[in-house]
Image (tube, rainbow, N blue to C red; front, top):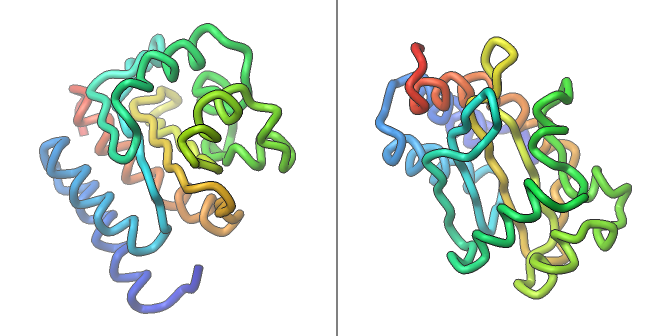
Length: 176
C-alpha cells in the first residue's frame, strides 16, 4: 500500500464520514466504498456490539452467503478457534489477520477449513472498535484464497480504528 495523494484523500474521507454522525447504513456505504479503493476486499462483515457481552448487534454483511450466519455464530461462541472477538478485544493492537493468528498456517483454524475454503475465501482481517476500553464495533474483512492481507494493511486498519470506534459507539446508542 502506497502513501500517495489518492490514498490520503480516501483516508481523510473515511475519517470525515466516521466523525459526521451519519446513520449506520449510510456510514457503512461511505466507509466501505472508500476503504475498498485503498485495501482490496472481497467480502465484509461489520456489526455494532454490546460491550458487556460482545454479542453482535446491527450486523451487516456483503459477499458472505446468508446461510453461513449460524456457522459463524457457533464458531465464535461455541468452538475452540483462533482470532476470536473476545481475544482480539483484549489485544493492544485490536487488529489481526487469520494468517497472523495461525503463524501462516490457516488450516489450524476450523473457521478456515470448514467455511472459508469451501467458499473460496482465504485470509480475514478482524478489527475491534473500542472506546474507553469498551468494544462497540466489530469489522471483519475477507479476501479470496491466495491473497493474504499484509502487515501494512493491518496497520492501516488500525489507523482507522479510532474514528471508526467513535462511529460504532454512536451507532450502538452511545454518546459521541
